[in-house]
Amino acid sequence: MAWIKVLSANALGSGAREVVKVGKRNILLLNHENQIYAVENSCPHLKLPMKSGKIKDGAIVCSFHRSAFDLSSGEVKTWCPWPPGVGKLLSMVSEAKTLPVFPLRVEEGNILVDVPEE
Image (cartoon, rainbow, N blue to C red; front, side, top):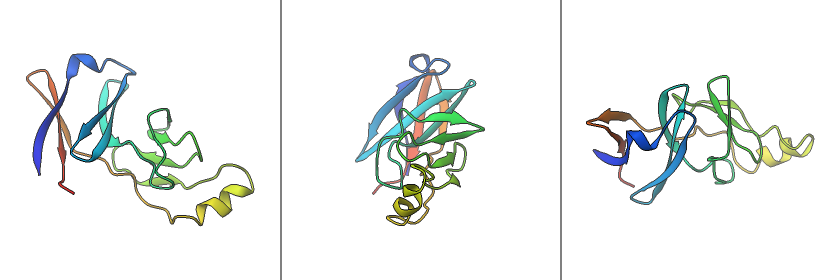
């Protein structure tokens, strides 16, 4: 693993989101309440993008099936509750999995992410 410069810190103002490519991964950088996070831009349920997910109680919520993942750890807070009734069936497509999160630091005005090689 190595620290990779992915974006200027100035390019990610409060509330901003940006998807960057690191190797084969699409990493979602987001600035929530002046804290920058780096998470996989793919929901572990059906691999749909997380960029438009809402932030609620420190978790990012998938806009498709409303699975929620802790921004700091990727821990599952809620697994596929949507749509009502059908969500339970959809949750059986894939067992609950954490959302990959990546170590991040800001150095000399740049955001660096530590992403393991695939």
